[in-house]
Structure formats: C-alpha cells, structure tokens
Length: 262
Figure (tube, rainbow, N blue to C red):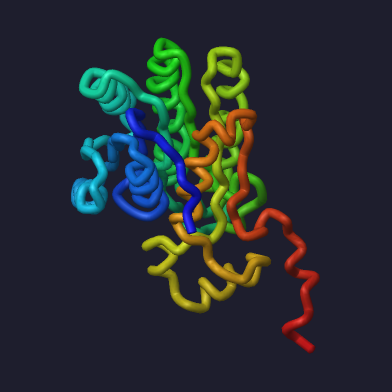
C-alpha cells in the first residue's frame, strides 16, 4: 500500500526513468499529481514510461539526455523551467552497473566511464538544478546512491567508490544550501527487483539474498515511496541523509546466522 502525497501543481525531474527505480519514481510522482519530466538515454524505455503515466491519467514528457554530458544536463534543466516555469523536485537516479572484477583487473576506461555516469553526472545535475530552485525559493533533491555507498562491494571497486562519493557529494551539497530551503538527500537501495537483477543467474540472486536480512528483494515502488517521502513536508527535517532502503544489508552480520544449518 502506498502513502498518499499531494504534488499537484509541482514539477518533478527523474533521470534514468526509462526502467527500474527511475520508472517507479516517475510514476509515483505522477500518481501524486506532479508533472513529471522523464529523462533517460534510452528513448524506448523513457517513452514507455511516459505512456504508462499518461495511461494512468498522469502528466509526463520524455527528454532524451546523456547525464554524463554537462551541456545536455544544462539544456534539460533549463528546458524544464522554460516549458513549465519551475522545478520543484529532482530525483537524480541515472546510473550504470560495473563489471565484477578485482580492482587490479579493472580497466582504466571502465573506471572513468562508471565514475562519469554514476558520480560526475550527479554533480552536473545538482549544479544545474540547485540555482533554479534557489531562484524559486526552495526545492528538494534526492540522489540515488546504493548500499554499496555505505559498505564495501566485493569486486566492485569503481561502483563502490562512485556510490560512496555520491553519499559524500549529497552531504556537501546539503550543507551548502541548507539555509536556502533546498533539501538534498540520498537513497541507498539494496537488492531491488529490477531488469538488471532479473538478468542474473538464479544462484547469484540467491547468494545476494543471503546478505539481505529481510529475506527478499525490494520493489522499485518501495524505493519510489522513499524518494517521495524525502521530498515531502513529512521529510522536512531530513537533510544530507543517506537513507538505506536495503532490507537490512547495511546492518551486516548475516554471517552469524546459522538457523538454516541446524
């Protein structure tokens, strides 16, 4: 069951909204009355998200953008304000996974690519979004980090580094603009039932579930509810927080469970 939010007459931007968490977030904002800008490099996925929102009676538009391109991000945000007159919320969600290899086997090209898409893009988005919100008198931003931004990730050096940095960037940005009515937070998802996870071999999913105390994958809709709450008046005292929405992965200690062995 979803909590009800009222975002009528508000405008929300969601990057990486062509699938998974981003799509669920875009749909949740639209279900709450907001006009949603669906941004993604994947035109087919983004267009489908818009169609789903409109079929449910919501308002949305698709904008194709590579979030690792600063000019493209600036054009995206400036275009939103030109067309809609405002930007109230932003969910900077776009990101990519990385190849699972030990650090010394990671190519420098992949390192740069993952850092560009998972970290630098968040900087570009914040840099474009914040001035618009300051001028308008306030706003709320949520960055998607990961539980890998709170703990170590085995054979995931560049992804783990990028997501830790997103958490740090969130805290720094939140400090800079706290007195200007801009609230910036992050969510740190754990094992979420997205197309990427669905493509993994079942033994890999089962192994990941072993480190998830709640014993199941999260749903994209659960991540979306966390995003909307952080943007809402109910979350008005939340600032610079990295919210673990992870089924307990960051708690650690699952290696001490032996109940399945006896």
